[in-house]
Amino acid sequence: MKSSRLWGTIFVITAAILGAMTFFSCTDSIDSTTDTSDENPPADTIPPASVTDLSIDEVGDTFCVLSWGAVDDAQKFSLRFARDTLTEQLWDSATVFSDDIFPGGDRITASVGGLEPGVFYCFGVKGCDTAGNWSALSNVVCCSTLTADTTDTSSPPPDTVPPPAITDLNIIEGYCESPTIYFTMPDDSLSSCIVKISADSMFTNYDSMVIYSPVGGEIETLTLASSVYIPGEINYICAICVDIAGNVSDNSNIIAFKQVYQIMAERCISCGRCYSTCSYGAISYNSSLGVYVIDPERCECCGECVSRCPRNAIHRYIIKF
Image (cartoon, rainbow, N blue to C red):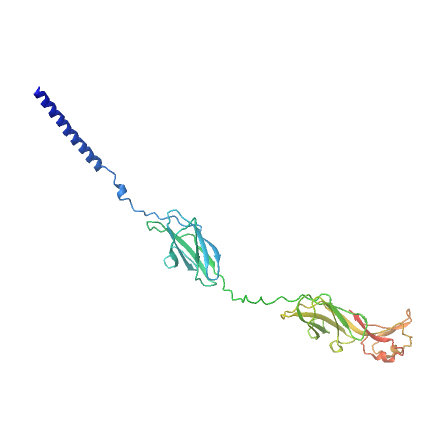
């Protein structure tokens, strides 16, 4: 009986020892095959994607505002620029605006200052991830800064617009000692109006009369001085206006006139004294009217006939051609 108990005890102890040995053997095997890859992961060598939507939002004389969209895996950006062109090969020599631009949203904006007016610049960006990998160069955008504005804004810009040209220049026809013209002044701030009188329709040479400080929009009349036109010949007239800024209008419409002598039919007694006096053959007898008449095209306005008329019937007359 004692022998049986002894052998039973020995069996239990032996089984326990064998079980413990098996457990520790399995544990060692498991430990030896445990994956330790999380403790030493491989280095990140993949750069972030390049920016493809870099754009210029505003250009000034000394600044340029740019923006671009955030890129996955890029924790910061570098913005650089150069004159004329910017490539991957020129990146290292380009001017650095900043190598530490951190995104603050879906789109990043940067205002590059200190630029020179009127210069052509090219801009580009690169992104950098947490492992220090830099992306390839973005799309490159270029622009010319504005030329510096030196205009004095404290005073209005100078007036460089000439006044409108006169379009209704005309002359009073009929019996009058001196020709009188009339026209409408252009509606502008005028300093003067210059009337040109010439025997040449091209106004190569001309005399002139000046109207000072005329009122714009008003009808102006001017009687020509005897010294500026030639009686008995065709004279041409045009006018120009000068505004207070010194701008000169184009020439007005051109009119032509001739000052001659004409016989008042109601006073003529058909004595013929004028006819016998005229050296140019300009006077003839009109049988249908029963009076003498003067041909304006042949009259030289010499006045010889005037002193011969006993009825004071011959007077100066303006004819428009």
